[in-house]
Image (cartoon, rainbow, N blue to C red; front, side, top):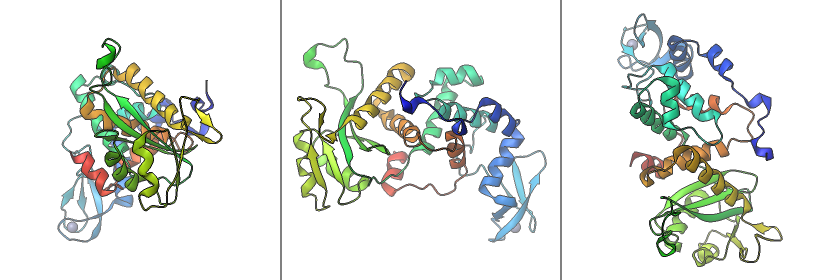
Length: 311
Ligand SMILES: [Zn+2]
């Protein structure tokens, strides 16, 4: 077992923790409301001011202490219009945050009793919360392309790799990762992503792919070092082992848990793996970090990421 797989005790949020903190649907709703509107102070739609709101009995709503207008903390979140109980939502987020390699919709169906279709939709919504805008700066950064989609195992050699989707992976050594679906492995496809996700004057390690030759001419002051993979995976400190480690993690997960990912959804699966990978060394439980995002009114995403998610 590698060191990364060992989770220190403080990081765990166990099923007992979950049941204690979120014993009922009402407890989940109260927690969600407090995260969104601490002490029930929320902007009233009618008064147009922050007002203290009080719980409306028997309904998932709160009413303004001055004018009585009702609001729901779930409006504008992934829970809005869902007929699934809030506790089930929380539990699915718990399951998704608790596994290193992901969990299948089939398993969520078995564990929660929702239909497969509902499980799949819920997971898709939760993955949206996992998407983030990250700008990498801790050099050296490793960059490599990965190819996903379909199983090539049964295809003749000349057809392999044909219908695959290209993903640009960028990793800070011992740090965070960004994985982005790109149209192809050309320089034209890579350059705009680099501009979005890498700080200027960073050192980037890649293999000898010609597409990376333009990195140093982008006007960002990037330093570019290459490693010849055919002569081993390392040339001094220059290597792309971290990003290759990320590829194998994702590929293992997709093969084992999701079997086959529709290419339309590949980015959202990458967002899920990225979310977990980028928090592997954070002491706070991953579930807490994820569930808090359900209550944020303004997503902390760059416009490009928001656009990507709305497609
Ligand atoms: Zn009011």
